[in-house]
Image (cartoon, rainbow, N blue to C red; front, side):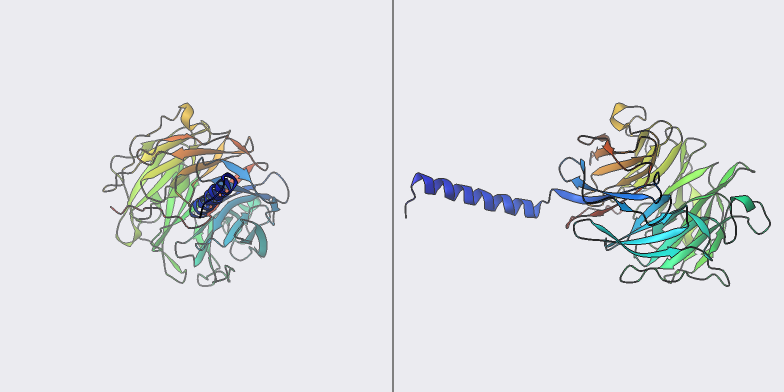
Length: 403
């Protein structure tokens, strides 16, 4: 059968449309939804962004929603990517949001902290998606006004079981307590991906020393102190991260402009790497390890930069920064306080910049770990962005290296 010119054009157009549709279906433009929590307004706000697959550029999608409380400071997502959890420091609430396939957030439940402690500073989900760790600045009945009292001598780590629907159950009990005591001024919590250990960073200005409180964890969420805990951790540790192998732990020391690295020994005992600590930029805050377990990224609050490192897989040693800290290629907005690598492809790094109300994006060179600016950034956000979380959109595969 022959086609006239009009028919030929129509046929070609139809084929092109089919091919384009097939390509788009296999290669979605959006690879992640990024959730930015800002605490300038009361209640706090959560803004959702689309992450572009090709460039890493962010674009706003949907409506900005209330965080469900005052002063959101930390976010975590369920391992099935169907729920977002937000810790609101100002009124000691945990809010669960369901995440739709379009990235829309719907408030599902609110938990008000009481016997578990108060004034949350950080939350983290275990790799199995069955436990949510909530780190509180104060133990029950304690506040800033009572700090130093004989009954108010530290923070509180609470453990909440997570149901199949994402709902939080009652906190796991520690004898008569609804929490496990930790040191004063707790800053971050990091459960190892293997689920066997949990670490909390804190610091004591009266001694000028920082510590890591270390706990072994049961699958039900019960904790027990690891021998040797607390471990020394510089002067003011504020961020913790570990690779998927669970063999190493990395901590930022805000006061000494360093990253401290540890080997994880049997039983979760920590041993500092002998060639550390490792230089960072000025006032390092948040830290993250890419999903492959190859690169470390640290946000430097005073420098407004990101430091990048390559991990020696056999030893855990971070290389010298693969991006010069002061270089133009890794500049962020003012006061980066949170950092993550996108979970969809593991190709992009984002920082939440607290003082200039923005997110900065970078593209990772997969071969070297170096960073280059993402397209059209920085990206304006809700006021005082303090926390980031992300979920992949569609099915993507990240190659994880095992040493």
